[in-house]
Image (cartoon, rainbow, N blue to C red):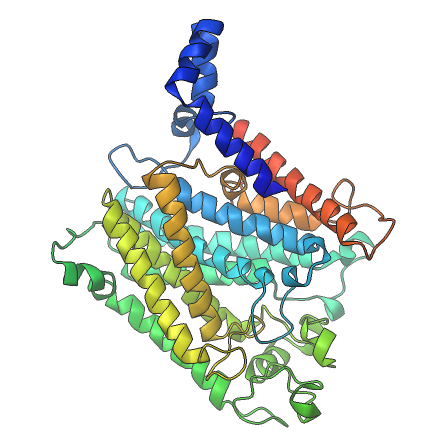
Length: 461
């Protein structure tokens, strides 16, 4: 349905830009109205409007904001909203029970990935303006605290019925993980960031490796964090479970380890946070009949969330380091995508369950990070080429929710059970009714984000 709408829109835009059509309009309409219609590009925001109110990043002489990043963020966000509303009831819009991937498992890591790119662009811009590192750190810390508290508010819904009780308060969640990831990656960048840019190398060999060589201290700490994750995951003794267990527990593995869901990751959460304060209904319960709580946004997985955000940070460095050099940007991002894909192939042996470390969203395994970052690099190459290089696409409609991502995410979580986002269906087993309800709810949030964009209202924390 939406593909058909997009095709009609694209065809209309193409026809509308033809010289013969514009000349005909000039004859049929007064010049002022014709100019207004042409500049509006069939409802897309014009560049003059953008320059008046957006906070721009260091990119070129006119400091024009990169639309591809907001488009990428908005795409991930809108798919996330659609998935959270039910995804039409289709299995591929539901999270995988354990190993493997569905479409629903792609969007959260992509959001973390593009957050990393935004972190670098924002911090680099403010450092270049002379803002001190300590001032930026306190700003980052305050933002992280706000994000964490908002996350606590929206995942503990019992506040609508009676006061929250500590005995049933869930601690970790999507926004909580985002807040911790944002804090750690920003602090790491502020520790080593350079407010000035080096001159890009002319040698092609240097060009391919300069991203790593110039920022080796950060990469050293990231590799250390990953070593910590591997050691805890594969070597930490878990009572009643085999060392290095990565399975779902329950009836998985022929029911040999029913209370070992998540291995070390689940054990650390139960030990540090407490069994009553983690997610009580994990996706593994559906197929594997697990009997203990497990949180897919737990403590150990946050380490790999930092890793994928840091890979996104590398995107920001590439965009700034090779400013105004589209070819170098595309080659660099494409090279990163290929490299991550090769690492994923080695770790997983190109299989779902037979690799050294399977792709697993619940564990946020390192193969999950490399696979999703591979997809993210390739998708960003495509969006960057279409939106910022060739300007064949304005980024609409995803650009608008990408500009108001926190508001849209919090709003869709708070109001998800209210009309017009949800209503009582006649046939709860019908994909048609589910799809209609979920598409309409998602579309309303896109419309809200567009109206807010036109009103120049942006919610920042």
